[in-house]
Amino acid sequence: MKRENIYISIILVLIIILILLAFLAIYKRSKDTGIKWNGETRDTRYVKIPSFTEIYFNADTKIQAFNFFNPSSNNCSMMIALVKDGEVYYESDAIRPGYELREIKLNKTLDCGDYQFTYIVECCGDEPNAQEEYNGVNFNTTIHVR
Image (tube, rainbow, N blue to C red; front, side, top):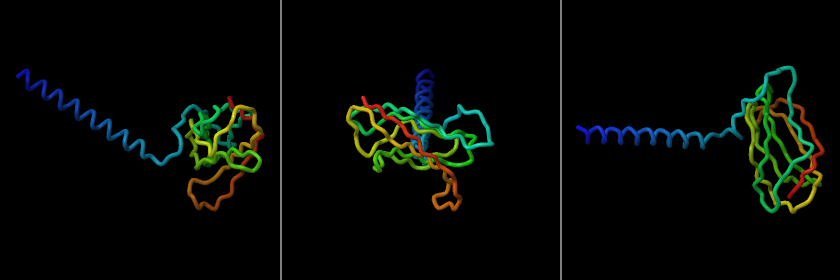
């Protein structure tokens, strides 16, 4: 009887592990950009656009920590870009309201130093061929690379 209980317990643990692995596999295949963000209060009168006057990156690597969120109160998706002297170093896919980026991959690495970039935020519809026109904004940003 004890042996049967042990086998049943092992089988139940294996089933739970398989369910968790299946959930993780489905979650990783999600087509949403970024990670669900839920720390914003709602104000539906305006589009809220997060801005940065200074950004800190690490030298000699394309992968950078970068927190950008599209507040859940916004009624549009957002795309961001980092541009220096006309060259695009990063351009995101559409980030839906309530989602965020935590990491980006630059098109090329940066050496140590301070750089003047244009940080571009464009509001867009959720559909790739949407005909709605939205506003955007360009910010002058200093990127400090260490």
